[in-house]
Image (cartoon, rainbow, N blue to C red; front, side, top):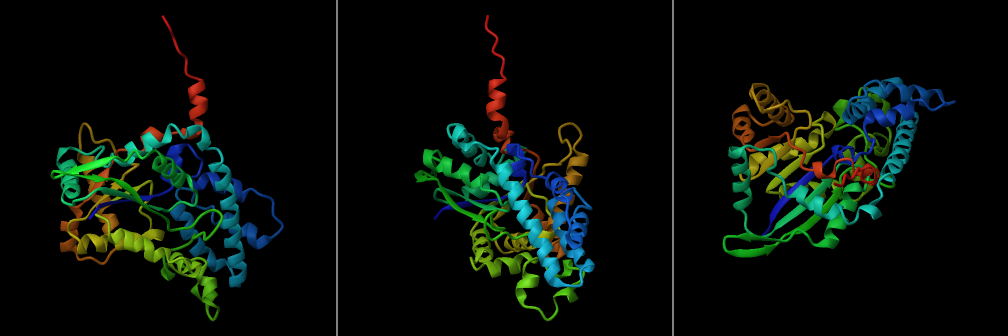
Length: 352
């Protein structure tokens, strides 16, 4: 038996490394390209209407359907977006020189994933530790990446080679810790990209796809895209979540276009009372002096997360106690690695 800790990792991971992977970063390049295709030009400006989050971009795809009379034209525009995004992200990933970081990354990456209680006060920290202590065996660290880049995979590969996870002492016995699954629920920049809405309710003009084969609407509804990709990724990720004892959500906005995952985690919390969830709150207010605003933020974040599910209000109250909001960045030791060599060369050493 093993203790399974599963990290759900979003774009905040790449941003922390110093890559320019915000939606606003990409869309500024994308929308300003000179085009002769009017459909494509209109589409590019439509999806650029809200630059705050990637989830807003995905919702924009569903809204854009109202501007099209032909599903094939819409799918061509959506495919253009995906192709340009993949190219942009590849260039961003190339800014990280893993060869020069292979001595640095393993240690700080392993320390980061082991720091899951970082930022918590005593009461919640002990609750999380009790959750971990309740399961025997070594700790298996699993990952579900919502990113198209392979930055997370490369960090894990380097850490595997160094065998730094060590052993876990638990109730008089010693167990090996290990890396488990690394799954990309939305594919990669070179294959199986999944980019779109959560379900049909987020598509404004469903009639656009009436009478057409499933691959048309399947291109823009994430769960259908995964099914059409024929890798059973949806099922693999669901199983991994269901086998998890502790789930850590890092670098993700709890948006509508990933609602199916928040629903599944909420159902897991309902059906498996021993499981706990930690949500990294990258925009949390300061909690050090007067805690009122932070506690309000903590409560509303938990409510927003659970509101994606159809769990009764009575159950929500008890489940909320097993959701923890962390203001700490566990991957802070890896901050701005893209400029590591530059920063290292700029250090001024003063000697006596």
